[in-house]
Image (cartoon, rainbow, N blue to C red; front, side, top):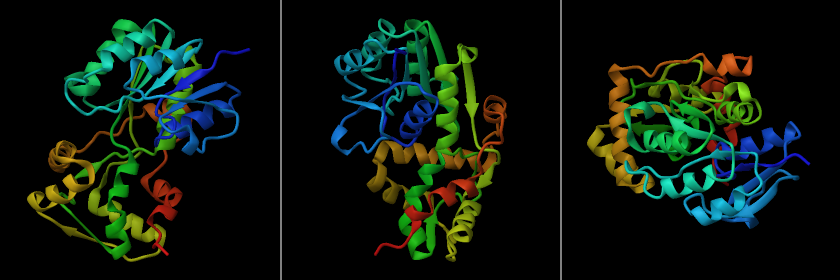
Length: 278
């Protein structure tokens, strides 16, 4: 019997699609989640309870696995606890595909985890994502009111559909040709934030306006939703993207053999998320 692939963060934005993609290719999947009773994953996946930040949980789940899709949940610069987890993987599996981020080569939590994976795992692939389109679900309440109030409407992002990230991960998990590669994973276009809101309105058939907000006003609201540290990171990143547009990479079409999914296609897939409640 083929050894399973361990998927951490199996119920997350990308993990759920990685599980489905592997099963579609006939690859056994061991899906790790903190709450198996609420997982709602595709039939056929072996679901195990565990936390990605717990090296004992990870070690137990990785026993007998052929590869691991690693999603590290930390956002601190020190990547505290990651060393023990990656060392546990290194002693049990030959291959790790790590969900990283653009700028990892400059350091931060993503760079720290990449370094750990390189040191401990024989075969690795890094998916350096520009930004997940799912992050714009932060605007759901504003979209439902018809007005999104945020700063930096001219900030241009090359947002990527989580399905494309997952498809890249599946290819790297099953195909040895991707070992030792660090891919830049983006959408097919660079699109401003105000333009994103316009697209949402067009797709869902409800007029939605962008209202420019000061960074100071925005920070408070973001902090309530995602915490102060992550709010600061978001504001800083948006500010930078006003003058320095996020690059558009061709790695997704090169690996998948098809164009990357557009932001408009992502909105269509998430139309229900923006629907009015009740």
